Structure formats: structure tokens, C-alpha cells
Image (cartoon, rainbow, N blue to C red; front, top):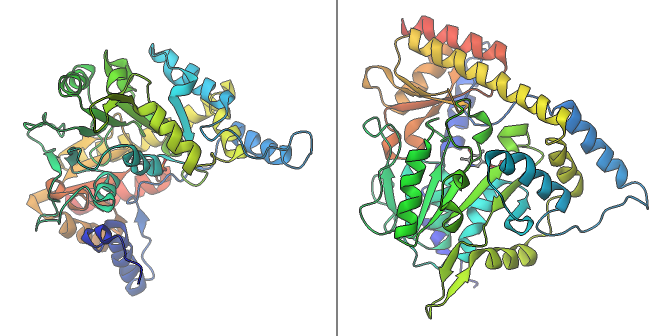
Length: 410
Ligand SMILES: *Cc1c(COP(=O)(O)O)cnc(C)c1O
């Protein structure tokens, strides 16, 4: 018989969102009259902006005519999209990048997972706790870890606890690590890192020949002008950081699928025999071999985000969600909760009242307020005692949910 990759068996069963789904379904079946408001899963709810939708339609029409038909495109993305990204997303931050340093993809989740292909298994990785579960689980699947302990920490991974004491910003690892995952604005905690904070990480990476994986999926939600949108705003980062971005949350592309990876040519690793080698070259080789590009209409739609109209409409969408975030944040504070995030990120991270466990608070909100959120413990052991609410709902639902929670907690 063919052998399975039994690293997969190390993964803990009962993944967070299926368990939430199970509890919500059971409740809804037992209480069919309840109007359940879902602020759990981090998915957008507003339709695509009109300028983006028009470009998407037009691109589909292109496929209907011999003269404008598009077949296979460049695996790493069309130049017209890459150049728009460089100009509108990076040059305005004072960051210059080459066309060859950007790789357009069908989303950031796959990118965060696939990047592991070009790194040797004996690299030591450091991961935040709580964290976007993809970083951890993909390292388990590829075989970098041992088994999980009772807490859910896998052997061989360096976990960086993020808690109230450190403001949910991890401390530098005390041992030498080779790969560091950072995500700011953070999912699930909603906190951001200042330039000084990121500088600390870049300095560490350079001093230790480490590579930072910087997940900037939520950069569009930053409202404070002093907060960096890209790790490349930090001097030296082009030598040590790979950045992941996505159109998913920024422009409502969770169902459309488009993301990008930045791999600067200066980011180097070593071969087994000790020579230095460029990760950019490896990633290009991987991309051209294992991927055939994001679809043509999707890339046209993504490029429309950077048109004047598309840009303004996208900003409106982001502002809509951030007003939701403000309503949730202020409302919970009025209800006496300790809250984090929600200012530069579409997530509100609240401390469960009275030291309740994350899942107990989940059940309380579900059964007493008919509001669904996400238990913090599902993102890692340090998330225990916390709870995530997402600002991606409709205004009406957000207001209603906050009113119910306020009434319940007062
Ligand atoms: C939503 C999200 C992404 C983006 O995923 P896509 O595959 O591009 O939809 C990446 N990182 C984090 C932390 C996210 O929450």
C-alpha cells in the first residue's frame, strides 16, 4: 500500500471553525426563532466595489473575443498588475521594489503555506501564540515538528506568547531561530506594531541570519499614520523579510482569490555546502513549476483596485468595516469589558468578563445574546480567556449585536 504523509496525523482534530459551526447549528436547530448574528469567522460581507466589478466583467468579455482572449499568462502575474502594486502600494510608502520581486497569486493562505517549500526542514521557526492557525499547521504538515503536547504546542517550534503583559506583541526569541512569522495588524488580536517595534525584529533577523515572514493581510485597515503598512518601511528589511499581502480583506476578494508575495532579491539563504543563494530565484522556480498564475479576470479586477475610482471605493469599504469596529469597541467598553484592537484592524480582542474561559464565553454569547464570536483559545493557548469579534458584519447586525451584549453584561 502507498504510505501516507503521517505528519498530517499529528494535527489536532476538531479544528476551531468546524467546532464553532457545530455549536451554532445545534443552537439554531433547538431555537429556530433566534436571530443569530455571526461575528465569528473573518470573512467579508460587503459586495465588490462597482469599479472592480466592471473591470471583472470587462475581462470576462475579453475572453469572448479572439482579439482579446487571454490564455496562460505569466506564472508570477501580469506586469500591469505588478507595476500597479509597486506604484500604488509600495512607492507611496517610500519603498521601491523591482517587478521581479513581486509574485501575484490566488491568495495569501496558500502563499504562507507554499513558501515553506523553499526552506530546509531543519530551520527553526518562531510563531506567535495566539496566531493565524495556518502558520503552525503547515509547519506540522511539512514535517518540521514533533508531536503536540497537552497544551497544543508542537515539539521543535519556538512559540512566542502574546499576552496582556507584552501588549500582545511577542518578545524576541531567547534562542536562535531561522524563520519568524509576524502578522501586523494582527489576526486575532487586532494589535499593530510601530516602526520601532518592527526595527527590533529586522535587527534581530539580520544579526541572526533569520528570515521574517511578514503577513500584511490587514494593512489597509491601519488608520494611524505613524504605523507602518509594510515591513520594507524599516531599513534593512529588504535583506531579511518576505511579505505577504492579499486582496481578500482589503477589497472583498475572499471569494474572488488574489494575493501577492514580495521576495526581495537581497533575501539570501545558504545551501547545505555553505554557499549563499537567493530565495527570490527559488521562489520564481517554484512558482513557474507548480503554479500557472491567478486567473486573468481576477488579475484585471485586482488591478482595478488601483484605479482612482476603485481606490476610493475600496477605501469606503474599509471605512465601513472600521466604523463597525469602532461601534463594537466602544460598545464593549461601555459594557465594562477590557478590549484590544479595533482601531487599526477589523478585529476586537476582548478579555472575557470575570475570568470566564473562552469557550464558556462563546456559549454564553451564543445562548444568551445569539451572537457568534471566536474563542481566543482556538488561536493558541495564550488566547485562553480572550474572545475575538469581527467587524466584517453589516452595520445593522453589528449595532444589534452590541446592544444585546451591552444589555446582557450590564
Ligand atoms: C484572511 C487572512 C489572510 C488572507 O488569506 P487569503 O488566502 O488571501 O484569503 C492571510 N493572513 C491572515 C492572518 C488572514 O487573516
